[in-house]
Every structure is written in C-alpha cells, then in structure tokens.
Image 1: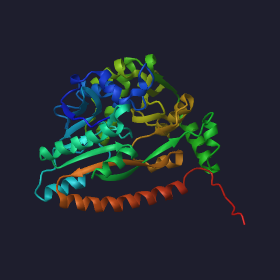
Image 2: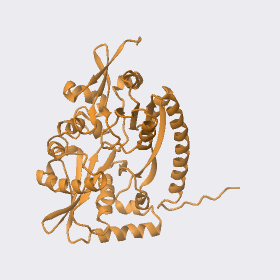
Image 3: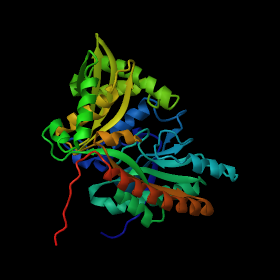
Image 4: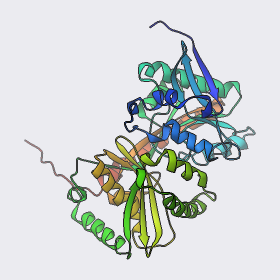
Length: 395
C-alpha cells in the first residue's frame, strides 16, 4: 500500500465515535459477541467512566480521545486524557512534577494515554488489525505533536504492552519498567493442583489462611452476568467508599459507575461477596478478559482474619482455573502476594518530556530504576513460594 495522509482527530467525548468503530480497533477479537482480551479499553467501559462522571470536568481526567483516520477509515484509536494531577495512574511521577515545578515550569496539565484508575496491562494504541504498525506510529507521533504544539510538559503512556514500549522507544520516547505480581495458570485442574506446586511450608500456610478466612460464620459467593443484581452494587459501593477514603481520600469511581456497569458491563465482571447474618460484609470486584482475570477493588465493613486474601487472591485463582484463564493480575503493589503464588512481573510505560535537560535527567534515573527492578524481580522469583527444582550437572 502506498503511503497516504493520516488525519489525527481529538475527540472530547466517546459520543463522537460509535461503539462499533471504536471496538473494531480496541477489541476486534470480540466481534460476534466473544469476550474481549482487554475489557478496559472497550467502548462500553470507557463510556461508563465518562457517563458516570468518573472522568470529565472536576476529576482531573479530561477526555481527549485520539482517532487516526486514513482514506476515510478509522485505523486506530487511543484513550487519552488531559491530566490536572497524577492521581489514579499507579505508575507515578509525583517527584518529577515537584522537581519540574521547583524549576519554575508548569507540569500540569499533561497528557496521559491510559485507562483511568486501572493498573492493568493492555494495548494503549488500539490499532485495527490491518494497520498495527501504521496506526500505532500515527497515534504515537500525533500524541507527541499535540503535547508539543500545546506547550504541555509531558506525555505519558501507562501500562502499555512491551511491544508498544519498544515502538515508543524507537520513536524517541523514554521507556520505564515497573513491577506487579501476577498469578500464572499452569493448566491446573483445581486449586489443589496449584497448591501441589508450592513448597510444603507455603502450601500449609495457604490452607491455614483459607480455613480461617472461611470460618467467619458466613458464605462466599461469586456473581457475574445476569446473577448480578442492583442490591449487590449497593453493598459493594459501601465497601468501595471505605477503601477509597482510606487509600485515596476520595473514591475514584462514582456510584453512578456501578449503576451503569449493571446495565452494560455485568458480563465483564465477577463480584465476590462475603455474606454473614443476611448482610454483605466484604467484597472483591474482578473484570474478566479472554485470557486474564483482573482483580480491581476490595472493601469490607467487618474485619475477619485473612478474608481479604481469600476474596482477592484465592477466590480469583479459583475463578481463573474454572474459566481456563491464563493469569490473574491482582493490581498494583503488594509483595505479600508473593507468598500466595503471585510472581513478580514487569510492567511498562512510555514518557515524553518537553524540557530536554529534564528529560535527560529522567532518562538517567529510568536506567537505574530499571536495573534495580530487574534485580528485585530475580531475587523475589528465586525466593518465591514454588518448589525448588534441583538440576544436577551432567559430566
């Protein structure tokens, strides 16, 4: 195909692009009703954030969605936002912002290509399958040009894929390495099959934790699809508010988000609820991808030993095994996940900074940070919960 001009449009709302056009780029594998690989970049998820007021005016996340058009066809889209702060990103740049402003420059607003409030790896440059390289390159270059022309401090692409990180580095952006803990499914038949791969001490500890957690004089059930009811969201909203107030000061999602989710996202979700004496006392919300279960939110109104681990980590493993999913991504932070079978895994982001001197300083920092994280991952993996296999050298 000969080179053609590509137009980059900035859309202030998803109302400006129909769901079929967006999803043809974001989740072409879901055409015909199949499950998307990444539920968070679907039109319905991002629209729920927008329509519920979880992004938009007053939130510090102002939609600036990108659309790349060639010969009248949308070849790529991206969820981009003008940010007035660095909250809800999980790959943080607070120190960069402080240093930038101490130098007399304005760091905010900045541009962020990301899924708001969602530390889950996935494609960020949502190119149509027929235009992967062309669409990705067009969006990358278009985003940088938008930041530069509007004299913004920076552009950030968080929780992108490794391939996107490499493409961005090739175009001059800075790559950053971070770390999460993921559980990997080695075709386990059941939870006991997974436990059998652990060291004896870790296996016994998990069994003890599950027994204590399930001894809270209540029941634990998972709800998804049509089994989800408005009453479940009433309970979960109470849990979510409590967690949000303690972690972030103000919950990122509005109550309206869960009302919309009941209508448009219930097939994408698995809500684990603990009930005692006719009252829901704790819950964990997961999103379901074609190959991955994404643990997102947890909260409770009663504290019971190890119930957090049970609902967030062990129930998630049960769900993943039952659905034949390849992995569980349990969100940001948490070395305590290591003892429960979740292994350290690299995550990736891209960064462009307008000030060349500042960019050079960040680039040097990122090299040292990447080396430290890679070393930490090696150490944590070596001391993980799985049985050590001794390999004898053959003479």
